[in-house]
Structure formats: C-alpha cells, structure tokens
Image 1 (cartoon, rainbow, N blue to C red):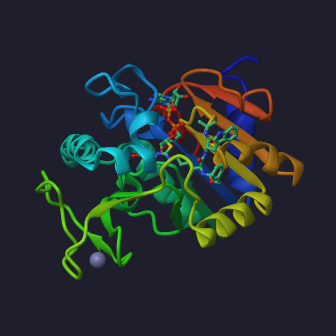
Image 2 (tube, rainbow, N blue to C red; image 1 turned 120 degrees about the horizontal axis):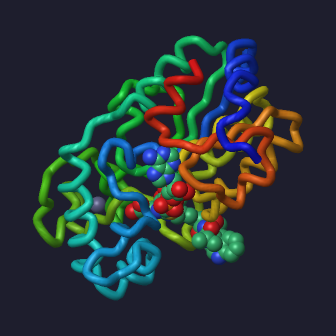
Length: 241
Ligand code: BV8
Ligand code: ZN
C-alpha cells in the first residue's frame, strides 16, 4: 500500500463523521521524547519491559519493579504533550460522539486536555494499595522505596495493568462500545500486538467503520485497515484536521 496516499480520503471521512474513536500507543508520545515500549530504549538494566510489567515480577522483587517505575516517572516528568496530543483535543471538541482509548500510562493525553478518554493500561501518576485497594494520585519523583499506603501502611504498587492482569471492566466495556459504534477509528502509534487493544482494528472493520492507521512502520494492523499512513504522529495527525 502507498503509505501517504489516502490523506484526502481520511480528511473527508473525518470531516463528515459524527462518531470518531481513537486508539493510541507509545508512538504518539515518542514525539514528546518518551521512549516507546518495544523500541531500542525499551530496555532498562538489561530487563525487557515485558518481564518487569507483571504481577510475578512485582511479587518476586518489588524494589526492582519500583526502581524501574521511578526511572520512567523521572523521564516522563519532564515531557509535555506534542502536536498530535493537541490535535486529538481539538478533534474531541469538533466531533459529536468522540472517545479516545490510550494504552499509554504517561498521562500526556489528560495533560493536553483530553477528557473523553479511557487509559486502559492505567496511569503512571497513580498508585494503588496492594492491601486495601485505594488509588491515590502521586507525582513524587522519585518515590521513596518501598512506598507505603497512607491509609493502611501496606505496600503500594503502580496503578497500571500488567501483563496477565484484566483491564478494568468499565474501561473495557466503554472502549469496545466506542470501537464497535464509531464511523471512523484512528489507530495511532501502536505496534498492535498487545491484547485486547490489538483486536480493535478488526472489531471496528467488522462493525463497518472506516479504519485508519498512523505509524512510522507497518504493523499487524496494517493489512486490516482501510488506509495506512506512514509518518510521525506529531506531523500526520494535525494534518488530518
Ligand atoms: C488481558 C503497562 C485478560 C506497563 C502494558 C497470547 C495471545 C493473545 C493474548 C495473550 C497471549 N498471551 C498473553 C496474552 C494477553 C496479553 C497480551 O496481549 N500479550 C501479548 C504481548 C501477546 N494481554 C494482557 O495480559 C492484557 N490483559 O488480556 O486480560 C487475560 C488475563 C490473563 C491471561 C490472559 C488474558 C493486559 C495487557 C496490559 C499490558 N500492559 N503496559 C507499563 O507501561 O508500565 S502493555 C504495553 O504495551 C504498554 O502499555 C504499551 O502501551 C502497550 C502497547 O505497546 P505500544 O503502545 O503499541 O508500544 P510499542 O513500543 O510496542 O510500539 C510503538 C509503536 O509506535 C511502533 O509500532 C512504532 O512503529 C510506532 N512509532 C514509534 N514512533 C512513532 C510511531 N508511530 C508514529 N509516530 C512516531 N513518532
Ligand atoms: Zn491501603
């Protein structure tokens, strides 16, 4: 597929759509300087992210996992939303029925001003008690290790969905409904390999939506979508509005 052809078609679809859903991944924040999950910088002290973002890793070595999150919090704390994040805020304003689903935990979409959104993998600026389950907003960098619950003094964990854990059922229901009922689905900067988000492209197609992918490279979603646009999110996404 020609990876820049199709921009006029996408613009026309977006301009006429009353229901738009957007799925984002690490690629949209790459243009803000946040390392992607599976890119070259995804390694930390020789650990793969997939091996640290699990309940088993946290049970085995909570200090190691918290050190990794402290490192990421420090990195993300200095980053700000880019033109793609801002363009999605504008799209939310223009479209009658809009929903943004992000796999990112960096909080850059809410920072930009997005309100109609599900952070389906959680948020790195929230912590949750492993005992009483209370969720607290927390922007301390670095967090003292190991952090304890202000309510019951038990161990805190990141409020993040790890591999092998279920997504919040309300987030999942809302996302599946938004994907299954939109006229246009934009899939921006995701490698399309982590489920359930990886199934959203075909779900939307089956429901009759016009599906657009924006990514630097082809992904497993590319053969499924109507239009695949190659390029950087911060350049391509604002150009679609
Ligand atoms: C669940 C939080 C029920 C951590 C994350 C076998 C088959 C099918 C499924 C499974 C299976 N084995 C296990 C599963 C289930 C598993 C899964 O999908 N595994 C995969 C790897 C096979 N899923 C789960 O466990 C989910 N839960 O299914 O519950 C259940 C329960 C028990 C057992 C089974 C099922 C929970 C998943 C939650 C994972 N949590 N992270 C943290 O961040 O601290 S996932 C992690 O991946 C991040 O959240 C990230 O957002 C997400 C997706 O990655 P991407 O965002 O796509 O990032 P990536 O680096 O991969 O790609 C970047 C892309 O951007 C690239 O394509 C690149 O080309 C592009 N790009 C780069 N720069 C730019 C750009 N594009 C545009 N512009 C640029 N400038
Ligand atoms: Zn507690």
